[in-house]
Structures are given as C-alpha cells and as structure tokens.
Length: 185
Image (cartoon, rainbow, N blue to C red; front, side):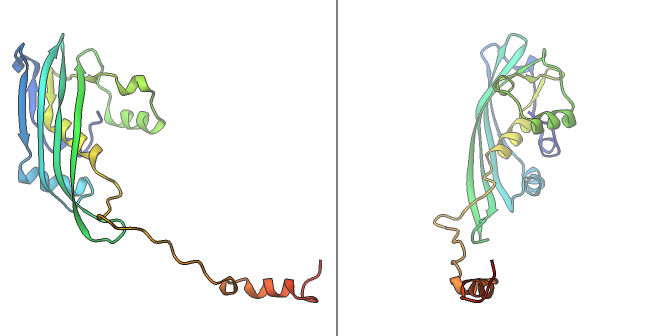
C-alpha cells in the first residue's frame, strides 16, 4: 500500500492493542472537508460520499483488515464530457505485519513502475508503530476503484467517417500515377 499525497488526507488510526481477541468492527465516514480535499487529488469533480466498513482481527503480532469501501464519485464522461456520478465498491483484504520493513514512498513507487510478481501482490503490508491507519486504507482502495475512463450510460464513441477515396491529400498524385503517361517507372 503506497503512502502518497492522497493517502495522507484521511486518518483513522487503530492500534493493535485496541483490537480485542474477538476482533473489532469499525464503520467510518469521511468528513466533508476530507472529501473536498480528496476529490481533486483523485481527479474527481466531486466526492459526495465515502464510507468504509472494516473488520480487524489479530494474526499473531499482525492484523488482518477485511471490509468494503463505498463511495459516490462525480466524474466527467470521456465521450460526451457531461457530468456523471458513479458508485465505487472495493473489497479490502489486507494483512499488516510488524515483520515487514516500511519502504519509503519514492522507492515503493519505483518498484511499482518496474512491475511486481504475484508473490508481492499477496505480501503483507508493514505495520508501523503498531498502528493501522484505516483512513489511508479506505483512501487507497477508493483510488483503486475509480474508473479512469467513465462513460455515461449508452455513450458510444463514434470514429470519424471514412473520407471519400478522391478527397485525401494525395488523390491528385494517385490519379497522375494511374493515367497512361502520368508516371514513369
């Protein structure tokens, strides 16, 4: 889970010591100020709703976080350029471990740009200071769930009509080449 400007906007820390042996259920709703700050960072016109529900359970010295991030996002249709609203629903299934070293964001970003293996996909996240920031988790999964090319329902991109064969810029040259004395071989 990369820590960047977007994941630094909403904090809801939970320490491992606050998680009972039976687990902890947490429901969050982002305040209006957080949603307003997050919308432009996420490339959205608006973010009228951002909620998350998490179930945290201890796994040895680590923490398993499962749950769902739900949002309504205001976007612009890439075909019609009209404002539209979409729903985001992302399932969360993460394991945080104190045995995983924290990697600075710039190094992690470089690693992601190179690509990673399936083993890295399932690797635990670092548990830093015995705390899981559920606001940052919710923000990151919101970002993952946003459609980068939103379309209004029924919107279709129509490619430009094919030009008449004689209307292209080299039509005169082609006609010369085809004429009996026009082109020499």
